[in-house]
Image (cartoon, rainbow, N blue to C red; front, side):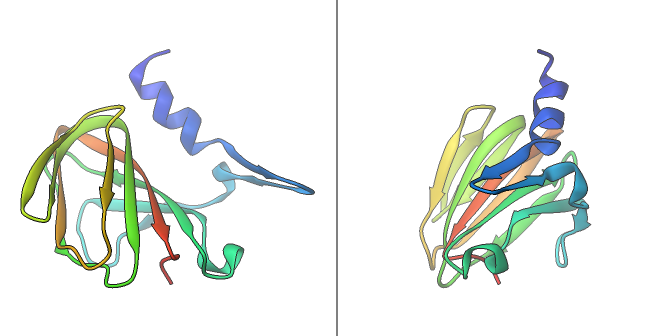
Amino acid sequence: MKKSETFSNFSNGVLAVPNATKKFCDIPWTPHPAFEGVELKHLITAADTNGQFSYHLVKIDPNKSILNHIHDKQLETHEVIMGSGTCINAGQNSPYAPGTVSIIAAGVEHEVVAGDDGLYLFAKFFPALS
């Protein structure tokens, strides 16, 4: 499988739970409200989970960033699906490459910078982003 197919397959996947299926291809990409060159696909929202958790696909264009910010209440995880970049988590630089999993504690400053090939993440929040 080509690298470009991996994210496409994931982006067009499904959420399978008892008595329901949610097709990810039916969920639109939306521009991030604060960061240029970043798009989000909200796979599972606070409304779906009574605020317990949320899951999001994140596309960051080449050499663009999700600048330094904090989620006061949410633990956040990133699973790198494709591309490359760096996460600055609590002041420490961590390289991002496919297969990397990163955990960002609630209340911790963090930033994500995409490399020349962009960056594609599966981000999870506990409790959910609202």
